[in-house]
Image (cartoon, rainbow, N blue to C red; front, side, top):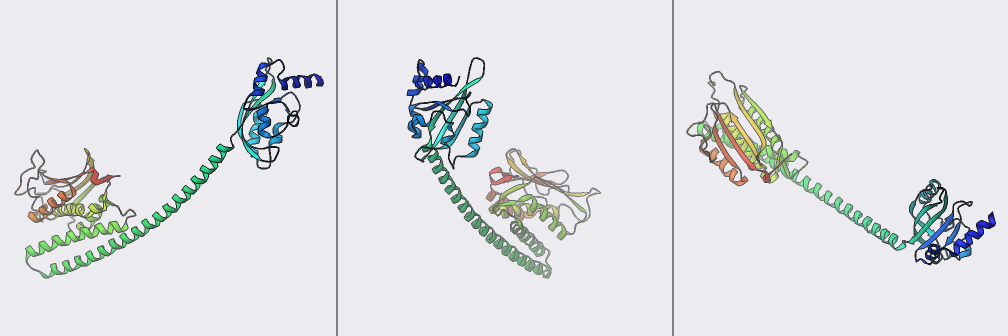
Amino acid sequence: MQSERAAHALAFEHGAGDPFAAAIRAARMAMIVTDARQADNPIVFANEAFLTLTGYHRDEVIGRNCRFLQGPDTDPAAVASLHRAVAAGEDVSVDLLNYRKDGSTFWNALYLSPVRGADGEIRYFFGSQMNVSEKKEMERVAGDVRERLEEAVDDRTRDLTRALEQKTALLHEVDHRVKNNLQLISSLLLLQNRRVTDPGVRGALQGMLERVSAIATVHRRLFQSDDVERFDVSAFVRDLVSDMMGAARRSDIKVRLDMERIDVAASKAAPLALVISELFSNALRHAFPREGLDGREAEIAVSIARDNGEFRIEIADNGVGMTNAAASSAAGKESGKVSGGGGFGLTIVQLLCQQLKARSETFDAAPGTRVVVRLPVNGAHHA
């Protein structure tokens, strides 16, 4: 029986009577056939391309398991996957680092598949090999280049991060100093306001004090923020309302806030803050006389929301209403003075809105006054 199998293997090796075996033997791709029915699954056929690739003679290959091509640097995990596929009788494709007879290495892209007989039993395994050493070398070089690039990017990122941290620290220090200087100016204005007796002068000084305080609040928010490039308008409004209500001592006025977060560029923070400060101060100072509102509860509502591609900032009160002005026209142009606000405050709002490319509209709310500022989306960021 053994002699018959050996004779069959010899005939198979030389392709006797089998044109397909002869074609494989002459093929330029390295190919082998192993006998799955023999112990240790030995090689029974190897074409010339396989011998050329590995450097072995035919008699050094036939009868051996192909593991003789493995060496100390062959990946055990890849070998294990090959063994599992053979044991399961499955196709397998794996890249192995193999060794030639002279000890040199090459990367072998091995494809192995079982050959079954009519009864379904695995009789042979057919393997094809391709030298992919150049591809592996290119992958290695590409990996080295990628690793160097990643290191360079990491180094550059660290440099930029340090630069940004330094810039942030510097800007925070600037904001902190500006805030302190503005607080000093506020103190001087407050001291001067206490010394004058003329109501008109006192009102003007009070207005300037509120404007300086609003800008100081902007710089306080910027100093506290982690992002020196953006300014949280809603957080500023909360601070502003708290400060102004505390200074006004009007516990009879209720303030209602309904605000989505809007971030604007830090460069736009001061002018937008002054617009909001002017409008809220106007409502607080002029909409609610001390003598009351005929029994209704005094309220100022501040809302910030996105509306039709714009950011809409609204300050409304239910106070005494507009004086010396009519409701806004259908075209949306400025209708006149805000309730009792005087010309200077309105002029400031108009000039700052032009700077911000925003629109300010005033409406008779009946009762009270409603002022809407529309800011282009590209001038702000919705969070």
